[in-house]
Length: 136
Image (tube, rainbow, N blue to C red):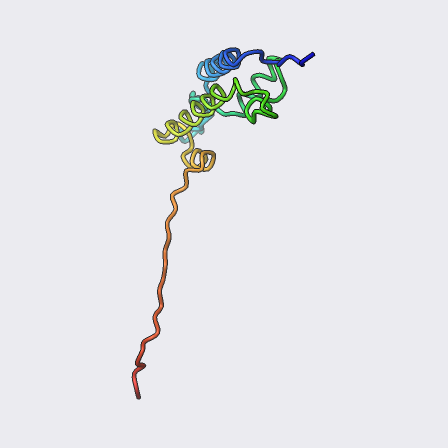
C-alpha cells in the first residue's frame, strides 16, 4: 500500500501558497524609527516579502508538513504532478522579491543576492612589452 502524501494534490499545495501569500501581504512588518531631536519613536508599516522559507514555516505552523523539500525536488519522481505548481510558486516568490527590490520596498542588495542578480563587470589591464626598447 502506497504512503499518502501530506499535501494530497498540487491544487492543495497552490491553495496553501495563496493562503500564505494573503497572510504575509495583510500583515506588514512594523518598523520602529526614531525621529526628531527628542528621538521620538515612530512606527511605520513595511511590506513583508514572500520567501520560500516563510512558506515552509507557514505550512509547518499549520501542522501540514515540516518540510517541502520532497515536493520541490520531486524526490524519486514521486511528485511529478507537483512540478508545475512548485515552479510557479518559485516564480511568484522571485517576482515579488525582484519587483520589491526594484521599487525600493525591499533591500535591493539582499534581493539581488537571493535571486542571483549580480551585475558582473570585467576590468582587464593589458601591459605590452615594446618590440624595440628605446636605446640609450
